Image (cartoon, rainbow, N blue to C red; front, top):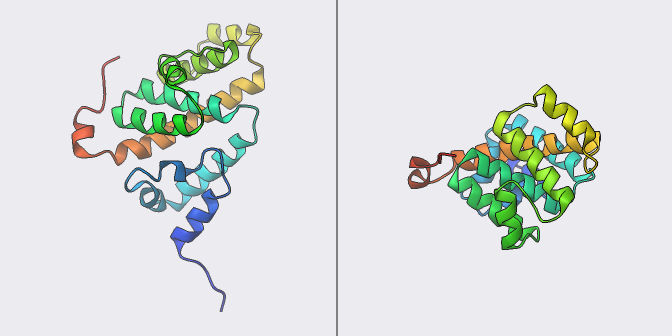
Length: 178
């Protein structure tokens, strides 16, 4: 008879391998980990995506900036609060957070990354003109664009989970007008 640890232990072990942006970064949100446990497929997909992204070229700070602008575009105050907490943990100062939430950054390359993530969050796709403009952007290479898209997708997944767990008073006015 083989021993199999309880599912919660397996999930926590999966995320303990992701030091830069694990789901346990959101453990301060009541119910986040149990909500993930409801769907083993979602846990596995999120874990694989986060692990793959961690191996990419973008830094933890850049990933946090992407998550912030995606949360801002989504309009959920609860998601903005959660992503801001994670951004602070990843070394972003308040000035960096304000810039990222507004779709920019102090560093030119970071600003290009955040602008792209904002456009992805805002529209969900690129127009042909935007694709041509990205190809001419000296700050972003094609593989950078793909990484930003992957990071924005992870942020959407995380924000969906966060928003679904928001307290009733936070959910009542959760979508702000742009």
